[in-house]
Length: 247
Ligand SMILES: [Zn+2]
Image: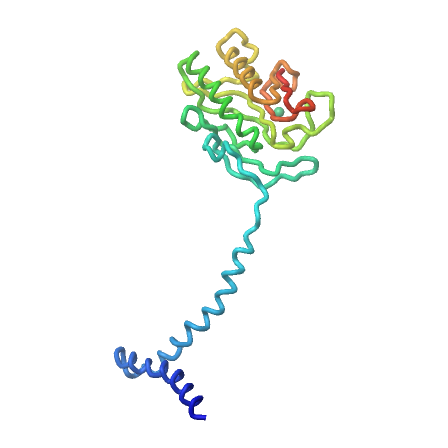
């Protein structure tokens, strides 16, 4: 009977003795009321806050998308977009591409293009080839890629087969021309026919350079639907996916 009484007596009174000692240092009038809530406060919130902290990480959604090496390397200026699922069209990891690195600088696109990683990866290499041609032939450089359609959920145009265009998989880009550092503006529609002029020669070089990089390159000579732009895509041709289409 004596032992339990003494044991309880030692633990309980100790915290109650501290408030009066603190109260004498600060003030005598309010001393008895202030220390009591300060003792109870640290115990209650600690147990209430813990469940909130453990719930927070579970609310972060898992992102089922993949990284793009060209973006990580800084070769492409792009932002991740949500996955596309639209009728027959889809792309798990589309990127909004706004620029490509050429000779250490960023060459902007005239408008953000929604592209797959495969397309985004090839663009800076192509732009670099065009830029080097301009440096050598005209002592200028590439200032901007003038782009048209990128993602568009539709069927192919200019072909006989009815199938979803690579544009429907964010795997294609239409390029309508190039803006140059010297103020020049090369336009496929008006400059392609000038096959002997510097503008026409540049466009033919750009077309052939694209053929060495992209799976598909269609220009004004492919069909009438492509008279005003280059269509570039990374679609699969042939059973091995190694064939290329250059027209
Ligand atoms: Zn196209």
